[in-house]
Image (cartoon, rainbow, N blue to C red; front, side):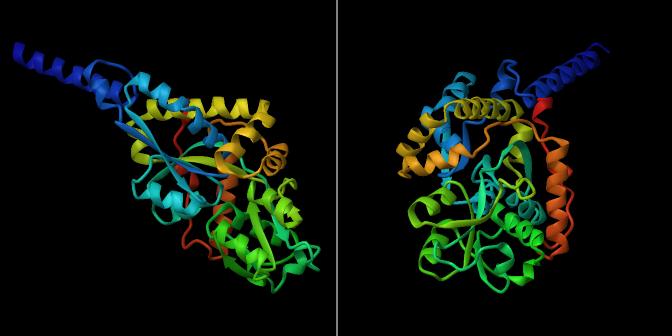
Length: 325
């Protein structure tokens, strides 16, 4: 009887330690099992907040104190390739626009929404000498954007507001770098893209905006997306990382001129373009809310109805509740 009682006590103790480990709490040897050796973060050069966070090494300092050895930063040109890497287990966390998570979930990637932040401003751009003045005039035209990127959502919304269908244009799927060359070479009629590429196109190439996300009907949010395994295995670590990004985000909103200078130094993109981008940006970071989920579900339903994604998805199934950690 005594031995049975000891086994129960041992089992209860191990269960308690396991629970503490999953919560990311420090509880002796079990806590060490709840800490990854390395946290891998995907970022885009256009994400100045993450560029600044990387430069200041604030996540590294915070995690080092917890016992995490290192942070690896992996650069991507835009969102879809980042989420491919996330789904493949090559990174643990990344920041993308509203559309890549929809494609990723539809494709079966095991990811979760971890936090939300306002999107960078987007615009539908035409060359400075283009005769096109309105989105309605894009009917039959070549319109470039990254496939599965937030720019694709802006394209669909802008067309709908102008009374056009997605099938009314010739979609041309290009990364920002390839779209820049096509835009300047006269090989496309319009380009839908986000800041700082939007600001660069205006500053360097005289691009004209015929619609942009200053129109709240076109605006949306961006998201920090984590692998489900990482979020559930290391919730305390993920919360810590997001908290440091939140602090940097708030600082950025209060110090835009300094942020522009730092971003220019880190990326090689001129200060004037960054200043234009930050002057129209919103800076905040917090949990994913019901309003975010409703917006994402509407986007998913729209894309499914248009045949852009192959099946109906339920966005609420892949949310990690930061506020509960």
